[in-house]
Image (cartoon, rainbow, N blue to C red):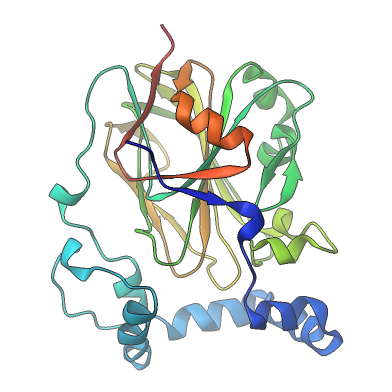
Length: 282
């Protein structure tokens, strides 16, 4: 069965984003919007009962099937946004050698070498600039970078792809900014986003790194633990409101050929939380 794909070239920014990035007044407003006080205030509003009326419209506009989620009377928008899905709707593939998707998302995969400049939301990086750690980046040459793009209508919780223990964790504070492609027409805004980097020692895939990246008006990456052990399929954390990304870097893995082929054509592959997307390298 062929997986659903998205062509990045067809993604169009909203009229509001066009105003923010292509209009002189809009760019002035943008400088205010990306400041921490404004972002924090927006996040605080979404956690109050005043934001509850936004829920109904969001469900309708994004055609969200609420029957997939646990029943709950949400008291505010953020509570709705981080809603939990019914366990049976996202079965975890527990096969020992299976590489699973950590999130509902659109996936792009890159083969890593010393010259790799990879794209995340149309911005180009090296592993060094993503990790802010040259030695760590060097360890993963020959491996894969998997970029999971979560849209606002996706399930915004994510899990561990294998069992193991946390070796290191670092949170990089930064300006909160939109991650849509239009943001990168003039400047590399994506690098200003906050991100959390977790280095993992896994049972079946060796050393790996997971990176969660927030976006404008998000600010909040909520991880449940920053040390200790974890189990495959265990919830690692969640994003509060906004578009977000999870990046997975590993060496001892083989990604499904369909996903590799789609990525070579600039097509994102639709994947679900807990779904098998590859296997450990034999």
